[in-house]
Image 1 (spheres, rainbow, N blue to C red):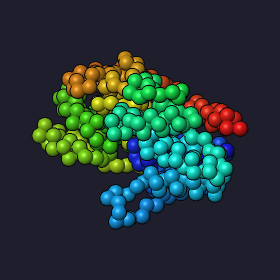
Image 2 (cartoon, helix red, strand yellow; image 1 turned 90 degrees about the vertical axis):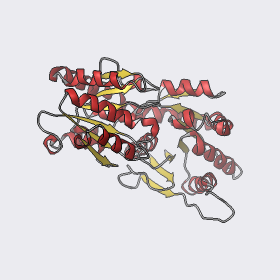
Image 3 (cartoon, one colour; image 1 turned 45 degrees about the horizontal axis):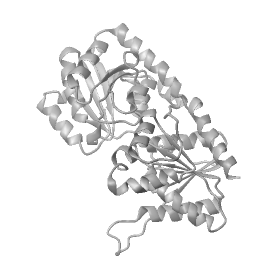
Image 4 (spheres, rainbow, N blue to C red; image 1 turned 135 degrees about the vertical axis):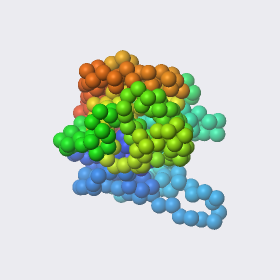
Length: 377
């Protein structure tokens, strides 16, 4: 199969999933073409089955902003026509599904049919898409896709609640490539490079946007370290990083926190960790939590969005209401104060994460591709 993948080529969950999916498909013998504004950050290599096509945008005095959707639509037409792609898989309703539909119409005028699979990831629905300015475009993009998937039951429900949708939405969860996880596990996890032998290591990974509530991470850690000797690893970067650093200084815990910035070695960092904190305002799925579970981290998270589908209350970790810092700290201390209890939760987290292995999820996408191609004939 020749598959075109359109995504945001960033550290965010949708970009990570799309990139990992494309690489896995190429390993399965499919010919995969990434069509994005620049090479996705986790795209490790290009081979005979894996290709990258950059979407260029020209500066033009008439436009106060660069019309990315037009450039993307034109590039999609070019790539589909030149490489005879069978299917387009776009991640995010807007602008990607919208641009793909325009490309589809242009291609049909040339006698070329190309089906569109759209995967919804969350922000395109719960934040951007629900805004009145974009609502009609989101509904149009979803209803005019050939197949639509969502990364959690929660996101599927939100989509049907917020929009008038005639298309069926199938839930296909995010996934973990455990073979890549094992690469880090085979290396020595030298915890002593970051913490003393009697200290627990707590980690948070995000893009530090307000929705991730990184200040709650600092507040929760402040309460934890009063009871449990511990270090906090803050991985990522974004608009609230400076606020988090300022709060850490004000609370007197700055010397117990390492701000590591963006990293391509997240799996290696998680290998060192005992507990993962994710106090988000909303999460359509919680890929960061799943990656932490795959590295044998117990999870302390909020109970919003798709997180209860990933973090099982009282088994893989604990769930709290958004903003309930005291409850998150209490649950974290309960886990960290007892070695045997902590290891039990870590083992259960690792075990449940295997339900989201790429070997279980990839065939679901391949089945949908075959289904939509069969309908196309």
